[in-house]
Amino acid sequence: MKETYGNVLPGMNLSDLAGKLVVIEGTDGVGRSTQINLLKEWLEQQGHAVIETGLSRSGLVGKSIKRAKEGHTLGRITLTLFYATDFADRLDQEILPALRAGFVVLTDRYIYSLIARAMVRDLDPAWIRNVYSFALKPDAIFYLRIGVDNLIPRVVFSRGFDYWESGMDLSPSEDMYESFRNYQTKLLQQFDRLAEEYNFNVVDASTDIRTVFEQLRSGILRTLQGEPRPAAVQTTPGPVMIASAADGPAQSSGSSPFASPERPDEGLKV
Amino acid sequence: MKRYGEHRIPGRLFVVEGIDGSGKTTQLMLLNQWLKAEGYGVVLSEWNSSLLVKDTTRRGKKKKLLTPSTFSLIHATDFADRTEHNVIPLLKAGAVVLCDRYIYTAFARDVARGMDPKWTRELYAFAVRPTVAFYFRVPLDVAMKRLMSARNGFKFYEAGMDLGLSEDPDESFRVFQNRIIEEYEKMVPEFGMTVIDATLPIPEQQAQMREIALAKLERAKQLRVAP
Image (cartoon, rainbow over all chains, first blue to last red; front, side, top):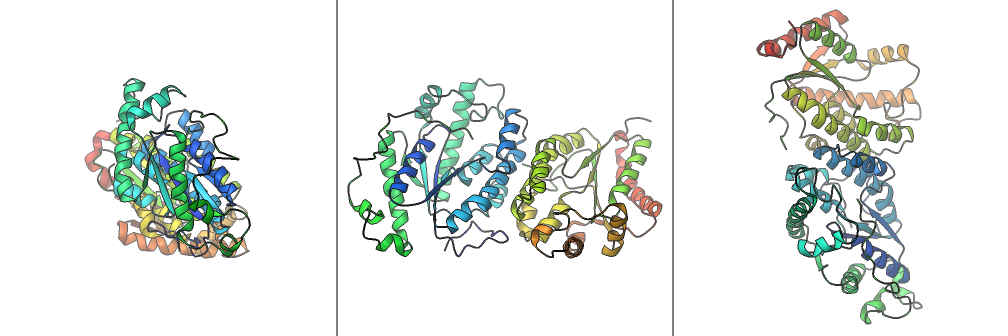
């Protein structure tokens, strides 16, 4: 049975969540959404229904967060709680219903990014952990890890520096490059701490897209096999299901997810 | 991040709490008038008024999108915005800040909606502790009579209709507000709230408020902006 990090919300029934919650974490520009697109396609080929979710995509507050961030006027506690509202809305309206229906929920970031950002902004560690104590513990957390030196060229040559990803709210006088470097370095330090605290599966994201994908894929297969799935998946003889896919070599023919040339990260704005 | 009770700032923060129809807003307005006449720099801050957040809250309420957790968090976001951009800077500048509803409203409502009391209290740990928190204690029937004569019908969330307590808005309001009263009564000793008997005549309540506020303003004469 699934658990939360301590606090169960009213009406939150944890006993019938048959699906799997898979988290892809990592800093800005590390390639999360590229990997999620590949994973979704692959999982669907394996016969799993998948939904994707990510920060500030809630129907309730997603747009408001984006609008508020454009004005650069949010205080750090306010921004943190705005994200927490977005998270709670997606948990109630998307994640829990999908898990109940037996979906694999792929989430682009989870509470850990939000905790890391709050920590870099000097918010109280106990306070921020309490805020997110109603979050569901994922079935697997993959952390795409990259050093700041590898990260910078990816960001510079794809989409440039972003105000918030550069932590400009913390040091508005610095130039964007210095600020980005300092901010991301601090974030990566926080992520490394969280990796231990929350037991992340760490994946080296400085290698090519395919290598990262293969690591994620084998990790997810282990997660899907970790507990017996409902009968359909286990007993149906016909199409290739997770069990045989796990034993065979990495699938390289047919509908390869690498049919299209590698592309820079996109859609990473939060 | 400074926690509740850790802020050391020269201003004064007076807040009023109580169920709808307790008369707290009326009393706060009167206190405001008096403080201004006495020459203090006074600023009012209302619950649910952050420009940044209130559109979201309004839309969420109108479309009934809010669950207990998002109801709680969106109000905390609103409160955080006002605290960071309004209340703390004003108190640092030495103002007298008056809040119509404060964190205790959130504690009462969120817990009445089934949220964990400890979680909710920690959520607001960044709030400034008020100089005085006035609680306007009133029997539910009295409050309902006042509300009925002032407007027709209760609003969806105000009546706790999201909780499915009753199909009938009046009955739902009664059950929900009774839960809120229970929560307020627990908070009176927990947070040292100052109880005002809200069944007394309006001028009598106001005289009590002024006396209590004055005692807290004695060493704050420098806060006056005009003679």
